[in-house]
Image (cartoon, rainbow, N blue to C red; front, side):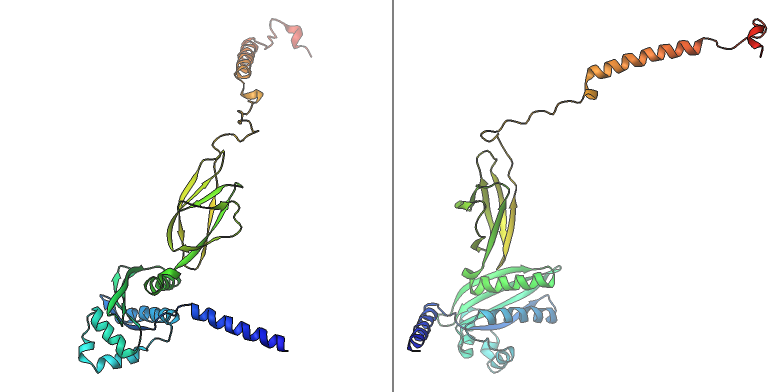
Length: 288
């Protein structure tokens, strides 16, 4: 029993130390998304999506919309804030948060354009800003909102993975100029920044396969590469032209032509000869 208790104590201490080593994100205050040429209902829907995602990323629950509205209604100076870092920082201090997110959303055809900024409350300075175009189906829109939130608050965690599948064994996999192993790879290449990357596969006897690939947030994108043989591999012989069939030979067709002409002459002669019987000149041929 003492052994188990000791192990439990050691595990608890190790867990606490591990948590202490992970820096906690500062709590976040989120002001309204100001609608620009967009109806209030759609703007509110997008704001709700952002608020839910920021709540997951924050070190503490976000102040509710009602709390923010109440604060602004009692302070005319803060209510007139136009998005400058000092007044956003003042709002953040009133809310008791470490950072403040504010921005606007506008319509662009069937899409939305969201502009967001992150302000450090203690220093009253802008830490980061993003401008994202959101479009697509509801599921795609939710993914785009998540990416925008991570890009603003936790860009280092905006990662994905690539699974490389190739029809050639032993091909060198080069991603963004760095060699990542040979096919078949044991596992997907993880921890990649979201966005476009340059992929190249090289193998002796094959043309280099190069392409631009996309890495998606918290997803493993599958890339299938089919390599083309450039020169015969050692021990192989070049492919020879398939032998022609006898009926494709020009001599065969020449012989067929001669036979056809001869047959035509014979048929013509046969048709030209009169095989009818004249009973007047040969009465014996007409007797029964």
